[in-house]
Image (tube, rainbow, N blue to C red; front, side):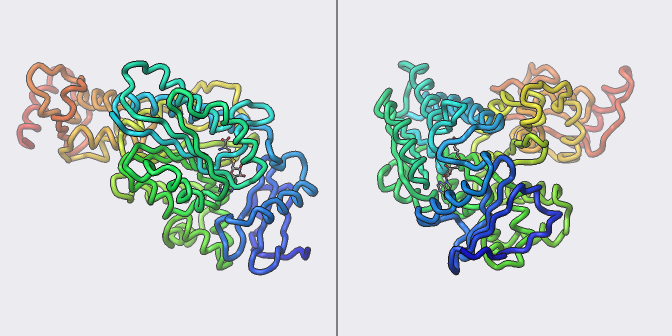
Length: 465
Ligand SMILES: C[S@@+](CC[C@H](N)C(=O)[O-])C[C@H]1O[C@@H](n2cnc3c(N)ncnc32)[C@H](O)[C@@H]1O
């Protein structure tokens, strides 16, 4: 085995690797692997950037890395960090709501959960990996629903590339198969190759049934944007993606290497990432720009109007990855933000291993902090209520726009029309929302004193109407 340099990543751009291992595995498959104290990351083999290796190669690399690495390597099952447990809790909270809401409304439809990077189904220190958490969420929703259940069956499907983890997973899920109308499916292979094989096993996957896909790889690669786009082309699909933004930024910095450039094209679906690369940002800014670009690519997909990130930080406080949710329905994002807030109720949508026991004193979600931002976005426009709701959902920590709208209306920065007679100022009843339009004042006005405000503002809006 000849150690060989494959990519040149400036030392200052590396997130303190404890150990870097470079292996030449015979042209053209050259990989670079690093131990980051808590995670093994694979930057990507040349000409095969999506970690789609033969099992023997995966096994070989893992054995090799075990020899050289401290206990933070990932053996067949490993210890979950606090952020891993938080991730699973968030998934579980969301899926319980997802199965329950859709189960009670989607008459005759199958509900499908796909875990694209399923893992072994358990951790040394935590009984449930994401597959078991999803199964339990489905069973809870099903048994809570009794006669109100309208949907057809629930299908939970798992894809895992590693043979040992796959066989452990099969043992873990087997007791749940065919209980409470739950059907389990599994494929040993890569996410990319496993999806079409899953489709062959599960024809209802391509028939417009609601589908939630959890995409949770180690590291930056393995998830071509084209596959995410194909999943989201089903109008009732949603995804939760572990986006290793700093790993992606690192690959981007090494993109003079053609294989890394190909990897980047695949992650984003085109060469738009080069606009970040050309800005020569500092590393943290680059990771944030990766997230922003990825969200904008998702939002550019037809009908994918809702995306939101949750940030995971490591023990040292540095960015570990973002969990990015994408949905085609506002209800999905409302429920996901509620699930995220069960993990971090401060409104920062961030979990840090360093502070996993602490609750934050500072709150980041006071409506008054977002009123001006919302006003500036819509200043001078007349928009339906839904436009403000979508903006607040996507761009602020808040789940509902109502408190912001109330404050702006109290301050006479906007005017509400279409709500019908009898509406009290500052209230936005759910049954009126669909017919409401909001006229935002053309300029921010300093709040007038009580006795002069009403007549002035009235005449201003009369001019607009
Ligand atoms: C972060 S772990 C998944 C953890 C799991 N989602 C959980 O929360 O319990 C990533 C898993 O993906 C597997 N894996 C790596 N590359 C893969 C690929 N291309 N396709 C499918 N699985 C892959 C690894 O063997 C590992 O078990």
